[in-house]
Length: 144
Image (cartoon, rainbow, N blue to C red; front, side, top):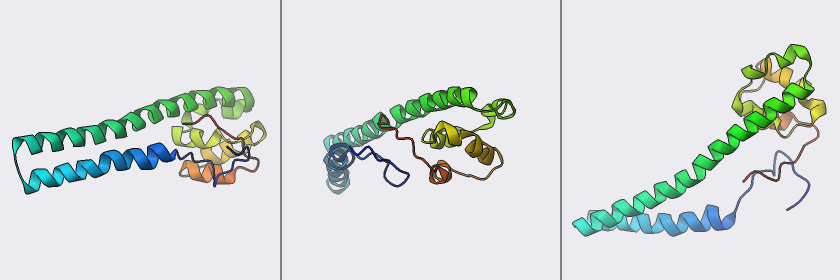
């Protein structure tokens, strides 16, 4: 993995997961659903239901850990902000959304105050705006 990370290249794609896994479970699920409709039987219906359940299981198997990861990032960033922000901003840390905190994790300590003020002033709607405003990117290679 490249050590140079930026707003444009920080997303992590795992081809075996993002492409192969979804193809390996998605294509058969569509086939089994089509077979249950085309040649209805209880066996075809049960197979289709099970394949749809596997699709949901794989999707939620990805979504749930990302939610936990976002909560950990929120905690880490709140602790970091409490250490590095001036007192007037420290009292407003709870006002910063998880969405914005996730964007701030890429900001170096020197940029935190300015970016936090801009967030609290309502300048950014989403984490993408925060990420794009960062001048010196702080890489995060641990996000899964």
